[in-house]
Length: 66
Image (cartoon, rainbow, N blue to C red; front, top):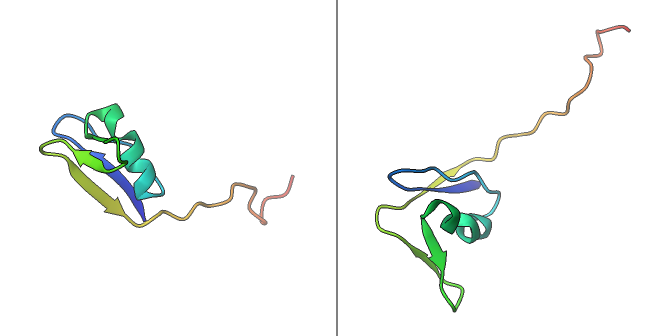
């Protein structure tokens, strides 16, 4: 799974773990980690999840001859 936070004005980037999404949520104004390490979301913040996309390897097709 991948995770990101969305505010009424901004969308965060996708992160491979929820912990990373929480750590960087402050950069878009979605929330912050308190002194104890708990995530505190600001009002109207939404957590969005999606299945991780498979990454394709880049390379030449076996049918292409140089």
